[in-house]
Image 1 (cartoon, rainbow, N blue to C red):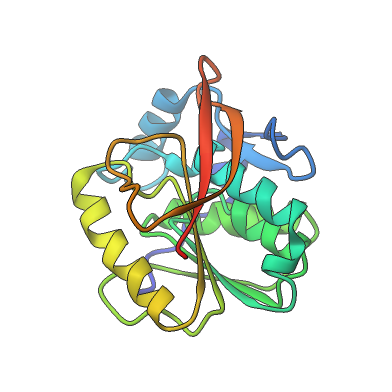
Image 2 (image 1 turned 90 degrees about the vertical axis):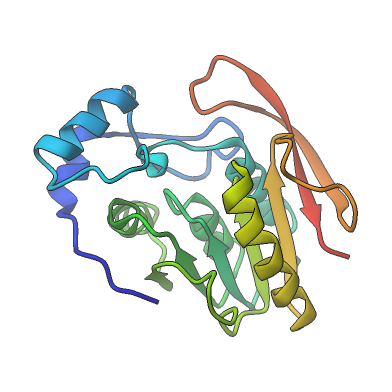
Length: 215
């Protein structure tokens, strides 16, 4: 678990606004109205944008579905140690703590995400999130529950994520995957725990989003 460079909270606060995701109005997040402008600001003011867009600056459908699910079914995480894989904004991590999780490990490769998670943790009045980098190449952390939202967005990422989730499940963890129907998510070996209609990150399309559970 690497420790990437720190991104100043003031940068995120100056380029985002607080909003409540439509499916999870209990939670506030720092989001961006113009992701392209934010990405440009990251390159010019923030010390480097990196290769990926600012995924942390939006509430994605899979993450919203997972957050809604654990808030509605707190017994899934209550008193347990949780991994939020591909944490982004930290929406799922915050929801897990709201639902009674004992502690949450939030994993994301983007240093901007790390700052966003800390800010969103603070603004929602929760504590107990440990923010880490990439965990996919090693043994799964010692957790009881793995929550993975919107992680199967391309073939390469899916090829890394699925074996990791399988390994966590074999180790005894409850594994839940939130996804809005992406082609890379296999249906074999997954059980639909819940379905929601969730606006996409840009708000232009409502997507049927499933919370999948490894059996």
